[in-house]
Image 1: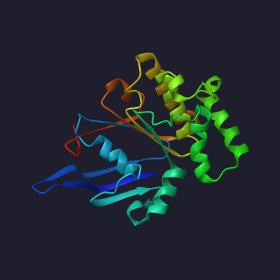
Image 2: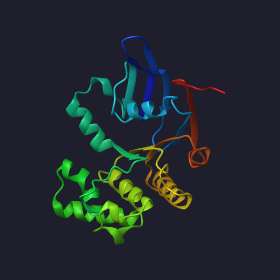
Image 3: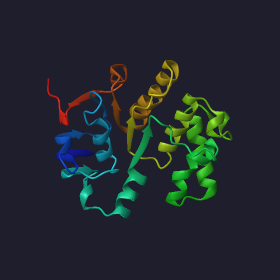
Image 4: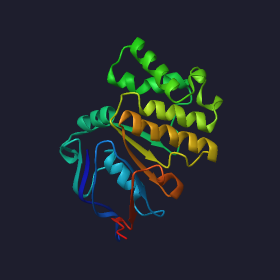
Length: 222
């Protein structure tokens, strides 16, 4: 489902080059739950941005569902992200003026779903993550754990086969973090969603089937 072949990402300044990724090759199969771990500055988030088509590699290939993403134009990349990839970040990135229900509906608006269909699915998803009772509240009226559950529901709006999680419990207390991780784990086990989790927390990697460690932009082979 996800392949990276000799992927490099180089940031150039006037005086030097920084290799954020320096030849990453890896494969993630359909339905896997993979944790990507490494120290701060190791390239974890850059790698996730490559998989999520939020950035393009300087060289190498990123293949999602058999499609080599560097060959796609901006419109095609947007459609790939919209239809195939759900994103969950440490910062919830909810729109403060919208209710929880409206935040979940947003990706479906971009896909052109009818209002009736959007509302039905958004309510289903809020129920799935256990917070249907806060559907009409705005983000500032919710706890951190509730906001992250809304973010998970929004990530699932268009039924993506891939879920990318960047430190999803970083702003949560231990109990809320465990609840969020359990939801993500169940999505993987029961719905077959492919999960890629970036974290520096060893306890989160225990939810994954496999852990890939990177250091200085390369896979750290023990």
